[in-house]
Every structure is written in structure tokens, then in C-alpha cells.
Length: 390
Image 1: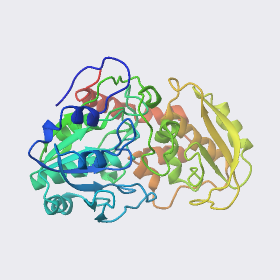
Image 2 (image 1 turned 45 degrees about the vertical axis):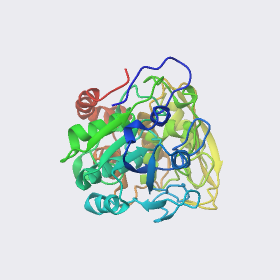
Image 3 (image 1 turned 30 degrees about the horizontal axis):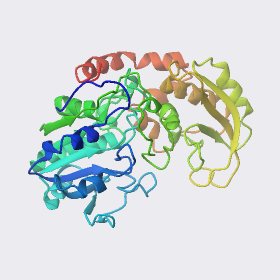
Image 4 (image 1 turned 90 degrees about the vertical axis):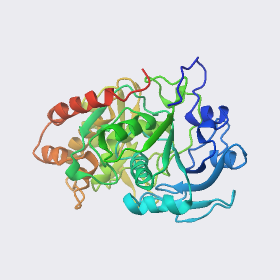
């Protein structure tokens, strides 16, 4: 692990430190990189363009995750395999490819070392951390080295919270038993995967950041925010996402198709009753405003939706997952047509049938949160062993 202590000022990412060191960690290797539009330098040059132009590194392939290498696809899509017009490099689509088929992609590409550099959002169901897992597993199968270049957790790394996934509910939005808001960086997660979950550990190196502290929000890092997916436009989105993404599992809009996804929530009809009910919960750090919006795509496309907007006024006091549970409970009470998606997506997103079952049974927010505490405490103890930044 290439490490070091920060001395204040802007956070230096793993890529910053790798390039400043002359790419010595990649010397003599044919390199492929798993990245997307968030793989940028502080002056927002893409790292693929930077590496391709530098004779000190032999970059031969790019691997694109969900939404694609250049980020043009909506949720649930990739960009396909193609040639990058800017560099001429082959770009392989890894979305929904895992195990031996993904190992075969790495072998076909001719790389010796696979590098990962993608900005995460801090939630278990944000798929890039499972692209990381799948690529580590495939690299081990293919006999490739694996290097993770670290970037900040945008919603801090102070604590893990929320329900822990049960492995019978494993999917691409949660492969292994970690909590819904994990409070880790991608380099820390890589070490956790290698130490706890991978049947065949990969030859892993990580390049950590300097200047990053676990208490930092993204706007305190001095780094540019590049939307990591089409519906994660700002770091404010990331702050609420671990909780309000659960509305994907309902027939209410989670704000896709608006300029404030996951901050705007609602359904057809007035939103005043829900805003009042949510405000009455007394949730710390957040206000709820009655809001109306017309999504341009996704649920209720072209229709007027009434609901609420979250306004986080004290992010240190705000608990996204707890807030999401309270909003589900109050929405079910207020909207007579409230329903879960038929595919049981609430269990997929939350990692077990606990949340949906308890809410349907009339449990309170406190009761739902208390029900996952023992499993969360156990995960926190495991997580603590892999934390790099103190």
C-alpha cells in the first residue's frame, strides 16, 4: 500500500499520488483501468487521457461499469464494447459481467494489471462498489494484479449505519453483508473484500489519499465533483441517497427525471399532508418542504407529482437511512395507493425482508432501526479492522 499523511490543503487522490510517483507501481505492466467520468485530475482532465499521453505507463485497455466509461447510459445500462474515440483504446463493457466471463474479458484484453478508479457515493446499493468486487474476483481468476486508487467517501467515513445485507438477498446492488451506508472508501472496501469475502484473494495494492479525514464531506476536500451517474448530480444527492433510494422499491417517484433526484419524492396528488407528517417525526438535521414536480422520465413521466423535498440543514445530525425509513412509514400512512414494487425490490435494496415486513406490520421508525442493530454492530467490528484513515 502506497500511503502517507496529509499536510492540509486539498485532498490528494490515489491517482494524484500514483502519477506524482511516476507510475512506479505500474512499471513494466500492461495496464487496464476500470473507470468512468469521475476518474479525473484536480483540473478535471480524465485520467485515461492523462495516462495514455504519458510514456511512463503502458495503458492498453479501459473497462466501463454501469452507465459506461463516458457515462452516457441511464440506470441499468452500459455503453457496450467499443473503441474510445479520444485515445483509440479498446473499451470493454463490464456491466453485469462477473466471475469467469469477466476473467475472460481481462485475459482477452492482454492486461497484466487491472486498476480501479471510480468515485463512490457511500451506499451499499450504489453499484460501483460491486463492480469493484466483481473485478477483484475476476482478476484473481485470471491471475492479474489489482490496484485500487482511492477517492473520498463523499458523505464522510465516520460510521456505518443501516441494515446489513443477508446473503440470500445478494444481487448486483449488494453482493456481501455490509451495511446500507458503509462509511468506507473504495480502498478500504477492497481490503475488506479481500480479507473477508473473496474465496481466492487477489494480488492487491492500494494507493491511499493524503489530506482526507473521516469527518470530511466532499465539499471540504477541494476536489471537483463530477456526477458519478446521471441521477447523482451533486454531493447533496449523495447525502440523502442511502435513505431515499429505498423509494425505488415503491410506486412513488424517487425524483428521477428531475434536477433533484432522491431529494424530491412524491406521487400524483397533493403533497402537503406528507410534508406535515414527515415534519412531525422530528427527524434531526432535515426540514421537509411541500413540493410539486413533473418528471421528464421514469415514474409519472410528464405528470404533476405532489410530495416533498428534503432540505438538510445540519448534515452532522442528519441520518439518511433513519430518515428514509421514517419517510416510507409516513408515505404509507398518507398515500392510500402506496405500494411496494411487485419484484420485492425493498428486500433487495435493504438486504433482507426485515424493513418491508416491519413497515407493513405497522412498526415505528425506532422499532425498525432497533431491529438491525445487532447485525450492524457485528459489521462495525469487522469494518474497523480495515479502516486506513483515522
